Amino acid sequence: MTKSLAITCAGILAVCLLGSCSTERDPRDLLAPGGIGVPVIDALLVVGQPLPDIFLTRTIAPDETFNTTRALIARAHVVVTDVAAGTDVIYGYSETTGRYIAPTSPFPTLVEPNTEYRIAITTQEGETLTASTVTPPSLAVADWLLLDDQGQSTRRTLRGFGDFESSDSVYIAPENQIVYGSGILEARLARPDVPAFQIGLHSLDLDSDFVIDPDFFDEEDFEDLDRVTSSP
Image (cartoon, rainbow, N blue to C red; front, side, top):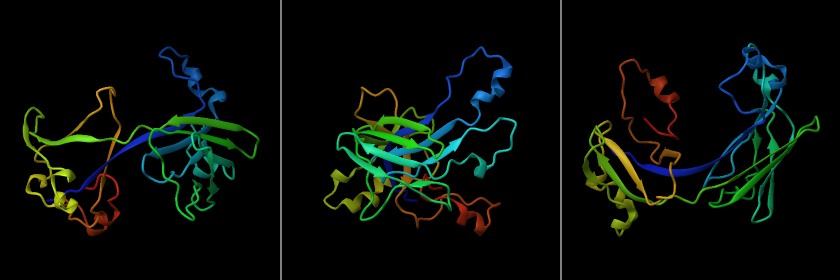
């Protein structure tokens, strides 16, 4: 079974305007009115991908049933700025989805590596919300390895694009054919200065066969599976 995967690096642009949690707290503080109705910005920047949709909500009481309509902050003024380039992207609000969406015409704005982005939001109530992040550099994978089930020994090294005259050959190389569940796929990154990475795997072959076929799945269940992220 051939599985085509792409690796992405992400910078998180999210802020909840609440105080940090303490290990010693009065239980009554958990229901403090001051923590209710606080604006929350939720967005994820992925290097090399278009600017993401933004969710803007308010916190509600823990004992209250969540209601999307009640939690959403609608029709705010949202601007994302590429600080180095000095360019602003003004988001539009979708009444249908409750999301803030970046314009895609004449073309979408892609998230750049090693770049500071700032977001500024003004709500209809006059509140001003700001946050910033610096995206990481694009990741270069030095080696892809297939390890044994315990992750202790290397079964083989996968071949990369640079090993072939035709880049498409990387998908059909015998060394790169992996049976689902037959081992652990390890990516070795040449970044000793970084203590940890947040990695996302995305399927490039959305029409490939599923690698799982449980007896309790109907055809409708397969149709509902998300093939964009880590495809089963």
